[in-house]
Length: 369
Image (cartoon, rainbow, N blue to C red; front, side, top):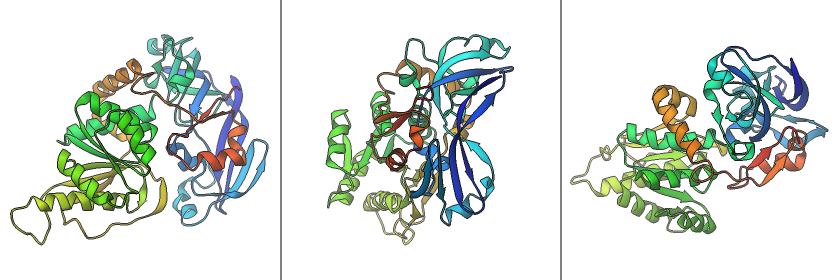
């Protein structure tokens, strides 16, 4: 039995969200399991759903390795299923395999540095499935820490587009780490991409990475720019990490305006062009606003990586992970604003900073530092 520090998060029925570092025991791995000494783990937006959610951390109670914040409605009731449960956090990370189960796949990883997806990566140790481990070779844990969620999600967007018969994609908040990866993938694969950002420096960043179509949502002529990009690419499939507000609504509206302009005769039902937006995040926790301005041939769907991978099948998963492994320091390179240990990630300064999810300002947790 191995012991070490681990982060836990608990939401009680009264609205108190407790996030704390505590001693935990890790069992000996069995079968296809491996025990990983975690050396680096990124704080992704998907982690914040359970780590901080919409709780009030401005007025929280802070102590060493522990913070207690109040969860407002409707988020408290919306998370009723987790009330009273003490949950680990941290989707992905990287470290060194220090013990294995008795399967050949697990034993082959002994002593290797690997990226993994244990679901409790904010911890000094974690049990992981050997099938979901990516050997890093000579790469450091910092290089490999973000080698699953963002790279595989970006690749999944392109795979989804191909599976659904599209040769062009629209992506919002496109200057993000994931967005930069998606831009590189689309250039490599010949997939046309419309990047939507909100600052001129983000336009310049993506243009510098070879992006052809970059639209600034802060410009007065945003909708005109977006329509022109859609007309040039034929992009009627979009991916939106913002979720709230009218981000997807505006894209659907622009899609319909382009499609309607190409109709030979008017229809009260709008164009026959399929228009679809996938929401894969909630950077905006407010309500999603949709207006009746794009006919009836449209859809909005949630997008989650794990169900996609299950549907895509093992052959596709292996192909995508191999591509990530071969391009860790190029196409799929990640960058971090700050590194913190487990206790430091629970300081008021750190939480208020990383929960803002600003573009290009991701935190890396180093559990043993």
